[in-house]
Image (cartoon, rainbow, N blue to C red):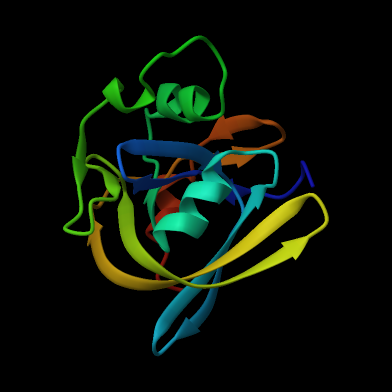
Length: 156
């Protein structure tokens, strides 16, 4: 799997007074009309309980230069308040939203599947924001960026 490139995102949710976020590389579009996608989260992560309780979550895709956010939400280092890193806002649903992300979705939970050591969550996109920033990628167990030529190539 290390040879595959993945987009890096922070999946976050809030339920009551508790909010949690987790760095995620497993994201898959499922449907364009209506827009649905799937994320995968380790079952040992507390965030799966909050997503199940709140029935909603957000996904903020990281941009170039946001490696410290990815590290913090992947539990690398000692961070008492991960949401104090960079600038966070909230969606109308109360889910956390990383303001400087390349793209962000606010989602309603429409399904979940327990698969071994991971939980798959299917989300319906309720709202979205985007910016023209290059996305931060994960490849060969390290951060990387797409080349501007590749990112702007119209020829597919």
